[in-house]
Length: 269
Image 1 (cartoon, rainbow, N blue to C red):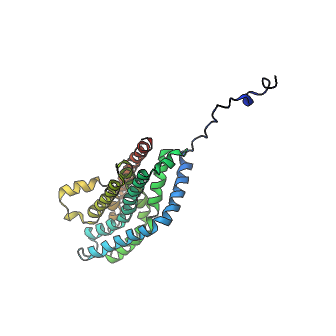
Image 2: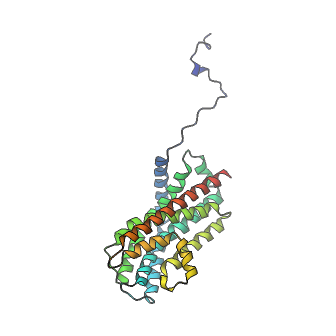
Image 3: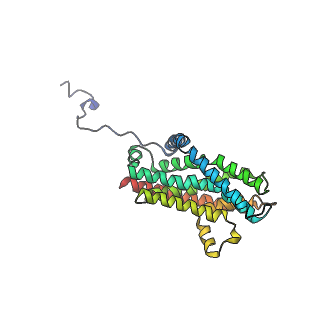
């Protein structure tokens, strides 16, 4: 009689499973993944960020022997392309390697067990990798502007160029790492993407054949380079700058959505 008169919750069968905790919401989960990845990136990726910045400055020095200083389109393209190259090295190349290594070593299983949306994992990692490229990009742009005799007053545009170009390139980098069948292929794809950003972003457009220009238009970082390059003109066309940034933002949304789908595909296999 004592058992029958007990409240219903005390008569639960020992075989009943306890209810699972509710899944975390997107924004809190995104913030948590971002903080964790940013802390890890500060320790493990700062030397590579130095390498990326040093590499871009070296390209500026090399191109200075080919391109004359002054308000020429070639000089603007070299400085803008070298600056965005820092973002491409970290957001595309390193993120492809990171997700490729996670998939190869089973590290994705850890994220799969967490009650967080798939988008928060991809967006958090992409934002962390892209955000700490800003100092290197600013240093490269400032040195390039002085070296090629360009104005320094518009460097604030990088506050928009870096996150938008970084989002687009991070999404592609994450998708390459998650979709590649092997870690070595993910590394190769990341390096090929960075090489494309180097060759198609730094070389002046006037020196490229038309088929290469078509390929250049497909590269997300191109629109970040174009937006930043336009600001060096004596009278910048801000309307076209906004158009380039808008295209970069649209490509970023698509590439991050692709990376989120690739993450769901990888953890479900």
